[in-house]
Image 1 (cartoon, one colour):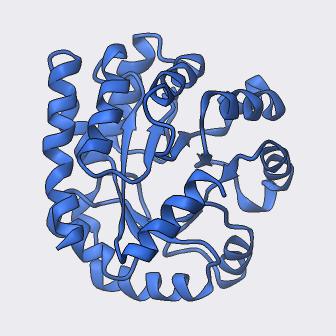
Image 2: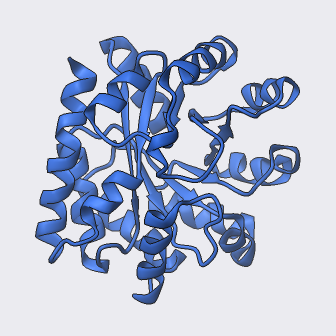
Length: 267
């Protein structure tokens, strides 16, 4: 059983919701990435989404765009990201790691080489924001050969036909984008409308459904988790880390931010 399947099976058996924090690799510093990842796990993270810095993150709002720019300026390319996962795995062999990013860095390496290197490093899944599901078959087949899950995205504007395809193809978990737009726009989060869509998705999907976009604190996490199998929090956490002074401060900020969300989901 893969780490992702095991984690969600354990959560379901315990009647708990998945807490999935997103952080940009290499921000707020190259040295802080691994300590922050461990701090998030200690504070209650079930899965970590690790952002691969990219020069044109079109699906991301200004908070994550700026973090990606800062990380790239420090030299946080794909090789750095995989090395960070390798170092993390020296102490944690159970927490699933999903890389979140864009297709270009994968295509530059070649999907076959990328998948082999990702699995070698200890990555469990990859979410490629700009890979349409209609064009994902070849990438998915390559990833499957290496044991790497291709995480799918659904949104409020996803058509019924495409939704059926996504649910049939879904691996690891299905990431539901709570509103049409970029990350971080928490003022657009409509938990009532999202709840209706999440119930529909969970009835169709063969994998757990995690809701993301706009979740910024314990209250929004708990509200969105009511009809989801888990929640993803990104921009608010990235913003909380942005001004950290050193790896220890970054890890402390990560834990302080995430702990109240864990408490709210378990309440």
